[in-house]
Length: 202
Ligand SMILES: C[S@@+](CC[C@H](N)C(=O)[O-])C[C@H]1O[C@@H](n2cnc3c(N)ncnc32)[C@H](O)[C@@H]1O
Image 1 (cartoon, rainbow, N blue to C red):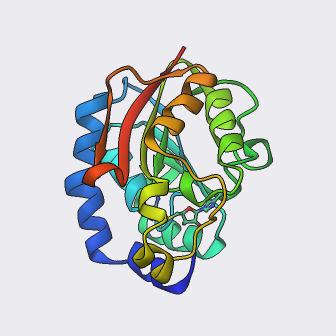
Image 2 (spheres, rainbow, N blue to C red):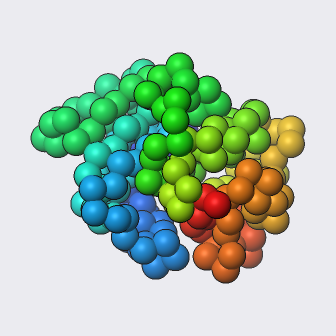
């Protein structure tokens, strides 16, 4: 991420949006987690979403990872009070075997707060998410589409991969290809710039 986006992600408005808009939408679409839920969060950034997963969705444990060690350091400070309910690691969502202990499909849920559109090989990340979710497990996602990423303002302010970005339909089709069923638990927002939803692993 460039400096502008890093500053934005670490700002009070980002936390406000996550708490009062994204998390309520995700809860409305996917409901709370089952008791004792073990969750993976990819691209946790500074860890505010991790806190919401614990507090608002009722996760028992969260494994959270991010490619950027500086983000993990911030998240570690933010989440220190949760003890061993949270495990933070630097890692790549495209290859989870290298970071979290996810050799089996063992997670009850995976959360993606606005990270997959940052990944050049985003389809490989979806395959990894499907691989680590147990049957019946849920994938909560909140994403930015090609439509938003191609806007001049987005391109001027932020730095994202440009090739092979996805529309809402393409994202949903890729989920289905990996047995992640969305049904009607998704919405596009702001005229199709964003999509939010919950898929269930078949
Ligand atoms: C837009 S920020 C979102 C951060 C946080 N989830 C939030 O919603 O505030 C995207 C995050 O994804 C991380 N990231 C990008 N590519 C990644 C990858 N391949 N694996 C793990 N994290 C990645 C970045 O370092 C950054 O912290």
